[in-house]
Length: 86
Length: 349
Image (cartoon, rainbow over all chains, first blue to last red; front, side, top):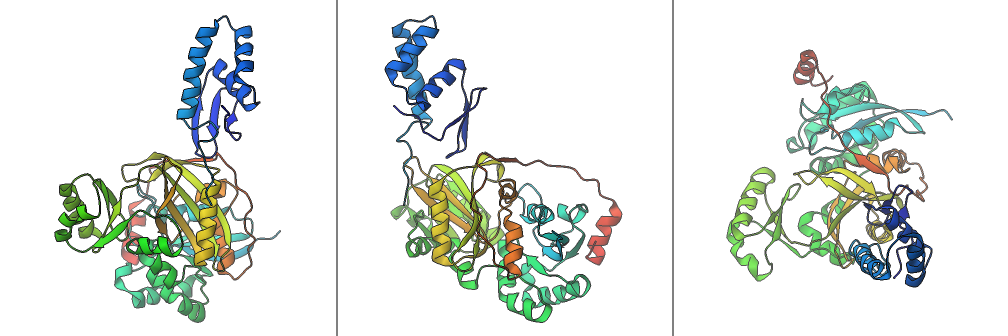
């Protein structure tokens, strides 16, 4: 899963999609995951980073990450949601 | 660089809940880096707010309503020009454009006034009633539509349309009708205000996006800024919006301007569906009321229009700021009765 390259993310957790004008806010861990996605990190790399930094188990990470990625997809922030027309 | 002093007359001073583009056009011109602009407001009614905005409008004259015809408009402009020596007129209403388009040669030859508006053919072709043919001609998707002249045609609409459908006036107003009964109601409501015909259009769902643009009449897009409405009033007007980075919208705009050789300002109203298809809903043949957002994004379209009107070559804008927002506000001006009396009785202030 890749996040759109042009998504802007501020240090305050404000997420802006310049193609649609949509904006969202996310918490600290959401910001960290989006940053890692923007850097092209794999699911495994993100999981390792989160489990290392936060006091959580693998099952909880998988469940919450699944929800978060679904939310990103629903809001059309992931790649493949936009197609360029002629 | 010394700015050139010019006199520009502007209509559309009705900065109300469904605002005309006059005040934002004037604000854009007042910020021009090329021109030192004296603004002559042209108003139709004594309560148009721009009349009383003396910090941006230097003098206002009432002009006859478009329905009074070209001759009375010409007579009035002759008088105004004898006092003000107008260099450029920027008309901002769809309903007045016909008169200004057909008078433009005369205004130039007899009074030296420059008007940079669409040709009559461009103006007529893009009428809402002709949108289906327009889409085919310029290879742009438009919602299926047809023109009706009587309520007797409403029951037969189900052969071609499914409810909900959109009921539109020829100049302004559009309502979504969810039933035949509502279609009757909206037909009567709109035709009473704007006359016939009424346009029936397929209802396309998605995100509404708009583009303000300007064409040089030779097929070149001088500027274009796409915007997504963020807050919409009950009249469907944008109370807040944001500039967006949508290359498909820009290429659609450029394609249309190239294909039509559009001359002047324009607004494209477009629906982007969830599948990512773009449907053209309307072309407004003048700047929109949110044109000042383009100025905020680095493209002063009204200034470019004045340059084009004066016969200058204008280089196309290459970029604009993305993620710039406008947030409209309302403001109560205190006006003396004397001023209202003056514009009401003398027709100028």
